[in-house]
Every structure is written in structure tokens, then in C-alpha cells.
Amino acid sequence: MAGSTFGTIFRISTWGESHGKGVGVVVDGCPAGLPLCEEDIQVYLDRRKPGQSKFATPRKEEDAVEILSGVFEGKTTGTPISMIVFNHTQRSKDYSDIANYYRPGHADYTFDEKYGFRDYRGGGRSSGRETIARVAAGAIAAKLLKELGIQVYAYTKSIGDIEIDNSRFNLEERLENPVCMPDAEAAGLAQELLSEKMKEKDSVGGVVECVVKNLMPGVGEPVFDKLDAKLGQALFSIGAVKAVEIGAGFKAAKMCGSQDNDQFYMDNGKVCKRTNNAGGILGGISDGSDVVIRAAFKPTASIFQTQNTINKNHENIEINIKGRHDPIIVPRAVVVVEAMTAITVLDLLLVSMTSTLSGIQKFFKK
Image (cartoon, rainbow, N blue to C red; front, side, top):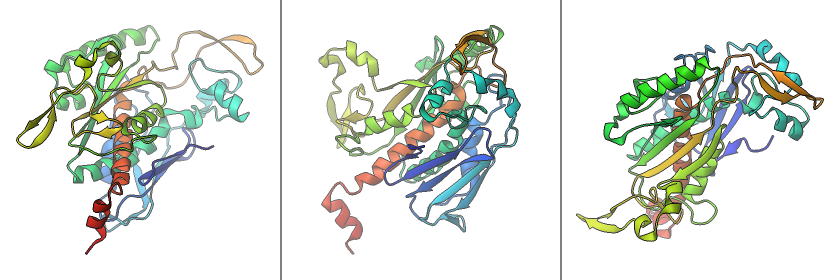
């Protein structure tokens, strides 16, 4: 299987399956000297851990990370950092039926068509459990960015038709409710909606918004490796993401140039913009304002209603899915979006260090 590696300098390679012995990641390109311990990673993994509310899969996993290499005496050594999270509560028998048919909305059919074989136990590599590896790597990227004063944070912007009100925005609130919304009132309405859909044996989608603050201008390569292009790739690589937008996004298509253009002005010697419809990126390069990106997640494909599908013999059948599934993906995906954003920004920031001769001379000249 190709495509399990992401990044140019700060590179991650994820491995493992939902019902295998474990999942993990190898992080290469992390500079030496970054203070790092398992607790730094665990804080992030705990945010995506299953079984924390009635709106998440009841699968009970501690998701305890172990650092196997790349850290010595509490600091990174500059060598590859290998991390593993063991699986402990696999119930593969719950998935034995799906070996012979294709679940609507899942990758069962496409995996069979591509490989002629698939790991039907919870989806194998297509399972959301693969994102553990991304979050572990993202925790390192976020910590390194923090050393540079750059902050990356994500939250649930909407669930179904319930959207947060920015006048009630409180970032701390996202950690106080099970739907990760920074608006307590919207969070309450979203939970009511989810409870209603769970009774109907149905699921719901939503939108995660991520913000990068204090990113200096000049990050991103202006052709194929644009900052927005790489962020799009990073977020589209997350299972269930069906749309990504930056800044005004699709709303820009309905604007006039006079409305969409972010006009510049100087404030005490600093370049500023009066609006941020560009989402902090111009020509594929960061402009110094907040990078704002959103990812739209489809509803969880595994629902407990009777559904129509086909089996491996291409016969029409009816199915009732078993197993342990989230009624909504969004709340546990918030930290995944945050992690992939941090990884992408850090990688392009490191690439940007070679953009000018003066920058190279400043680093190497004694």
C-alpha cells in the first residue's frame, strides 16, 4: 500500500489496523533538543479516545502511547521518533458478517476492487483508529510550533444545522462539553439533536474549524506545495472529510472583488489587513494573519437502520450493521484536524528555511 507517508522534512509514516495488535507512527525530521515525553502525546490522544460520552463509540481503549525511539533523557535526538498504541478491546466477531457484503458509505467495496482482499475487522487501514498515529505525530508538531510562538487549535463549528454563535465564542468551553463546541448554548442544542438521531438509529455530520495564530508571513511554496494546497491534502486525507475551505471559502464565489479583497494597512509598523477573507494565505503563502480552515465531515456511515446493499456475489441484500460505532465523527475528529494542520504548517515552515540565501547564511555563517 502506497501513500502512508506525509511531509517533506517533517515526515510521518503511519501503520497498523483497527483490529491488529496496535497502530503507530514514525516521525522523521524532528529537530534535536525538543523536550518531549509520553505525557505530551497522551494529552492529545485523550481528546480523541473512544468511550468518553454517549456520542462516541463505546469501545473502551486507554490509547496509551509508548515512545520507542528518538527521545533520550527527555529530549528529541534528531533521529526517527517511533510511537505505538496497542489495541486491547478488539471484538472482531462483530464484523465477521461484513466479510461477505459491502457496507453503504464505507470503503469495503473500493478496497476489494483495488486489492482483491480486505481486512474486514473494523475496516483495517480505512478505520478511524488510524488517526491515533496522526494525532501522536501532531502533538509533536504542535509542541515544536509552540516553541516558535505559533498556536494551532480546532473546534466543532457545526453539527447538522446547529452552528456556533461567534458572539458566544469561548475556546475553553470546547473541552467542557462532549461535542467540542466553543459555545455552550449551541453545544446543548447539538446534543439534543444527536440524542434524537440516536433514537432514530441514524447519524449526523458537521464541520470542524481550525485556526493557526501567529504564523509568520512567507510559509508555503507558490506552485504545487502551496500552504492551502498542502492543508487541503492533509485534511482530505482524513476519513469522512468531504469538503475543505479556507477563509471565506465557498462564500467567496458569491462576492465581488471589492468585497473579497483584504485591504492592507499599517499599524505601528506592522502590516495588517482589514478583513481576512483569504484565510491568512495569499498565492499559497502565509500572509501573517490567522490561517482559518474548515473541514466538512459526512455523517457516520455505520448506522443501525436496515439498509440495502450487495454482497460479494453482486446480489441485492438487506443488512443490519452490528458493532460499536460513533453516532457522529466530528467531536473526536477535532483533534485530528488540529494535528494534521500542525504537521503541515511545521513541515512547510521548515522547508521555507531554505527560501533565501540570506536565511541560509544567517544559520550557517559563524
